[in-house]
Image: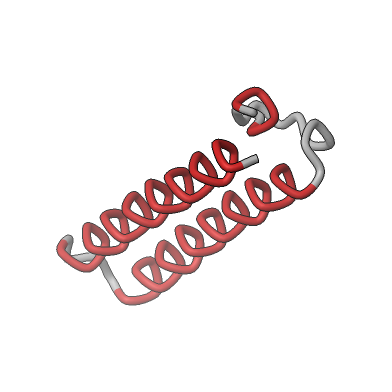
Length: 75
């Protein structure tokens, strides 16, 4: 249980860093305003969905098989 929780925390941190880097990249590239807003929303929605799937997989292991590594495999 503790090992699965540690893997979950590491997974969420990695997803957060990747989302932060993508948001920073979108801000650094000069893109017209509508595309900039759409890209930010898409990145945030995808990041939140990945975290929700990871949390749901932690609560009920094996219930979601969407190509993500199952946290049940670690503990």
